[in-house]
Image (cartoon, rainbow, N blue to C red; front, side, top):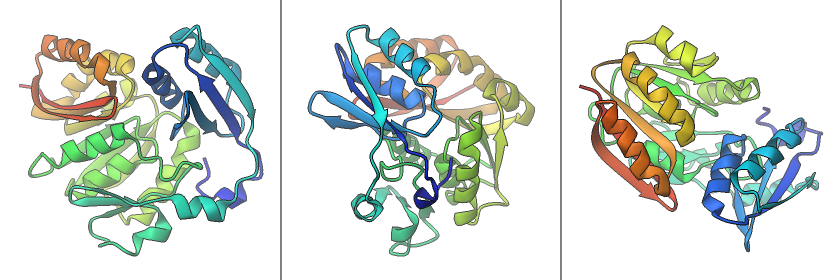
Length: 281
């Protein structure tokens, strides 16, 4: 996925969904399919996907989650990038600031995470991302070895490095996300500490274990499957931060966490989303 918008001549795919039920469940589906941002336009959810996105599969996932939803798909019109850039903001999150390159110069480079936006929804910040960043700052000192699974743009990996992690392995299965994540790592000067690995977390995480901290911003159904692997990949007393979980799913996830022998350290809630910091014995 290219981080340079002007260089991408292919039109993006515009998706508009009118929910028939819980819109938050559909938002989770859209993010799981690769959306980096969802706008609410009245009752409708609007987002964009890169050229080549399998729309048949996307529609099927939406309808599985909400059979009464109405989905409209079209090619996105040409974007006025100057107007779009003017709408992008920096995000102050505790000791860190996440900003696009053209705003980063206004902030301390030691505590600024520079993220090249990968699509026309700002830097792709979402409540789930912010939750992980806030919870990371409740850990002191920052653990030495960190794994970030489902790393995407590598924003969380870069945050971990900026907070003091010595080595971070960013695991991402989507080939299209790799170039953007590598670009972001270089832009932040953390190439020696953040290492991008393309692959499935179920395979890669045990290979890089043991680690002191696992970051996992993934939908709850996948997190439930990954919890035993995460547990076994941590050092004794190691911690994990889980996000991508709707608040309506938090009780069920807490049951899974406690059944797995974890201890809950801290929680973070924003809008419809819930994130949690947990530790293994």
